[in-house]
Image (tube, protein in one colour):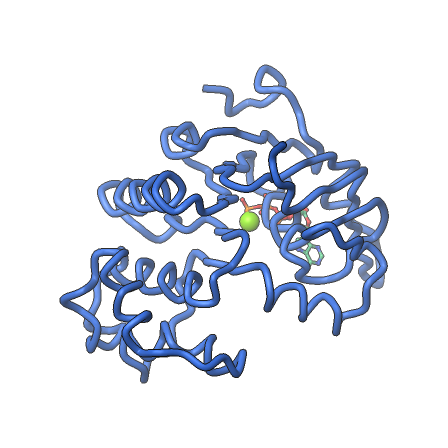
Length: 231
Ligand SMILES: Nc1ncnc2c1ncn2[C@@H]1O[C@H](COP(=O)(O)OP(=O)(O)OP(=O)(O)O)[C@@H](O)[C@H]1O
Ligand SMILES: [Mg+2]
C-alpha cells in the first residue's frame, strides 16, 4: 500500500478581511502519497498558493480535515503547525528567498542551524553537488544566475530531509531553459531519491511533466475538461 503523507477531506480556507470573506479554496479532497510528483495548475487567483500553504501547515485551515503523516492537524495551534513543518515539510518559492550575505553552502546549512540539528558540512556540499552546483558552493546569491539561485533553494529545502517538498511557482522568475532545468532536477529527485513533490505552475508544458495534475478553478478541484488550462 502507498504511504500517505498528506490527506485532506473537504479542506476549505476562507480569508476573513474586515469588509469581506474570501473563500480561497473549497472542499478539497486530496491524497499525497510518497513518491508522488503532483502539479497544481489553474488561473491566477484560483487558489494554488492557498492550497499549497494549507498542505504545508502554513496557517490554519478554516474547515474540513488535514492530516500530515497520519496526524490530524485540522484544529492544531500555530506551535504544532510549526513543529509539523519543521519535521516533515520544505518549501521552495518563486523568488528563492536566499540570504544575500551568505554563500550557497551557508544558505543550505541555515535550516539545520535553526532546527538545531547536528550536521556535517559534507552533506550540504553533497546536496549542492546533487543539484549541479558543486562548483559554486562559495558563491554569494548575487554571483549566481536565477536558475542557480533556485537550485540553492532546492538544496536548502532538502537539507532537513523533508517528507515532501512544496514549490510555489518555482520557475516563475526563470527563463524557459532554466525552468526546464529545474523541472529536470525535480524529475531526477523524484525518480532517483523518491522525493515527494507538489509544485504549482502556470506553465502547462512544465505541469504536464509531473506524474499527476490537479486543476483548480475558483478554489475547487475541477476535471481537466472543465479547466481552461487543459492540455
Ligand atoms: N492573505 C490573503 N488575504 C486575503 N485574501 C487572499 C490572501 N491570499 C490570497 N487571497 C485571495 O484568495 C484567492 C486565491 O489566491 P491565491 O494566491 O491562492 O491564488 P493563486 O492561484 O496562487 O494565484 P496566482 O497564480 O496569481 O499566484 C484570491 O482571490 C486572492 O485574492
Ligand atoms: Mg500563487
